Length: 156
Image (cartoon, rainbow, N blue to C red; front, side, top):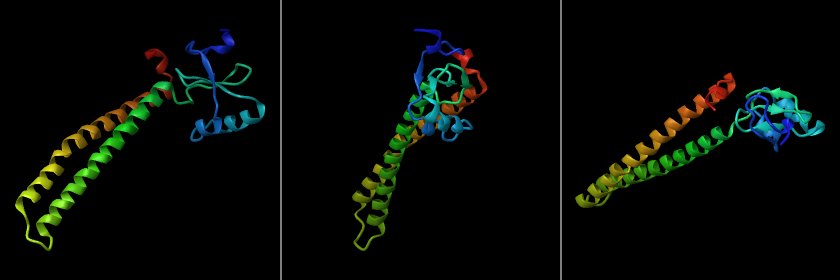
């Protein structure tokens, strides 16, 4: 592997930036991504987020989401989906309990207690996955801030 295929900031191998407009969409380097469609592909470092032009010159330091950030963001989204699923079960069980208790028919105490306890039991996994999603979001913000300030090189 030549020096042109490695990042000058961290030494990590470079990869091609396949979708520059999507990757650089909300950054201040979106114009560089648009230019690359005409001038040639950009190269990116998955370790520190640096972008290089086709000739090997540094275009932007820390502009692209790193591999660790992508994995953590996927994990955060999964935890949020699980949280929302258990939240739906909680709401549905409590709605059934209210309907059974205050509906048109005579309330059957066993069914009301069962549906209310089911909703209450689902609060535990709901709160567990909510905590996991909240912690992942906090770590993701910390990683992004470190990448933008250039501190990621000290950690990795």
